[in-house]
Amino acid sequence: MTDIRPYPTDDTVFGSSLTGGSIEPAYSGMTSFMRRRLSRNLEGVDAVVWGIPFDASISNRPGARFGPQAVRRVSAILCGDLQYLFHADSFENMMVVDYGDCSLDYGHNDRAPAQIEGQAAEILKSGAHLFSIGGDHFVTYPLLKAHAALYGPLALVMFDAHQDTWNDDGSRIDHGTFVGWTVREGLIDSERSIQIDVRTHAPETFGVSIIYAEDAHRLGVDGVVGKIKERVGPAQAYMTFDIDCLDPAFAPGTGTPVSGGLSSHEALMILRGLSDLGFGGGDVVEVAACL
Image (cartoon, rainbow, N blue to C red; front, side):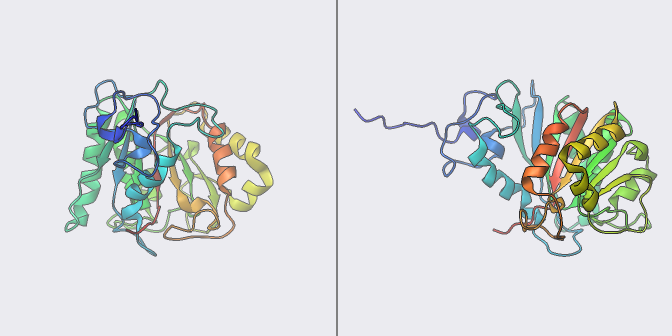
């Protein structure tokens, strides 16, 4: 007799457990990040994935508001397998949910910073770690405010083609100025913070260490990992990964692509090497997509 239900479907809503992978075909079912349960019940949850569909501060090509949807769509193919380079199923023992998206009023972008910060703080109160999907890079600023309120000043580990330290009087909503704000407001410890794969020049560093792309290629993966660990040390850290840190050959779908960056393989190897740092949270931003 033919099994009329050979695979479970729509694990994102009807799955039986918050742990473990999914064997649902990647091309079917409702979308969530790597088939995690869509839920706002955070009891016992270890980590939360949260989308921030905001790109009103972009200075070049828009589309990062569609980043959370795009990342969720492509992530479906990864669930159910051991994750390459990490040799493990991330969800075997860790309870992770997809919390959905941040609630924002597109008619009042001036209110977005407080809305992002406030909703992030509500999630962090549960004790779960928060990993956010942007959105343009401005969203990291209110996210850092919420995390610093919990952990104190953080060591910022920032993968980016840009320093995002351009001059600002403190009144702009701008994806290219937020690092200066975080230093001035004491959200990050600049002496413990580092930017990796930078391929542009800004007038200020605000004391943040920089590994330029040419130096990253000379150092190699192990050398970059060593520099990051030396800089961060035992500090509580926050990672922000701007997808434009990758060379456009590997990630063309971003607002401000710059040639000469890391390959996807190099980035994965560096991330694996940082697994023993004390990350309190993180985000991936500037994934520009379209419907």
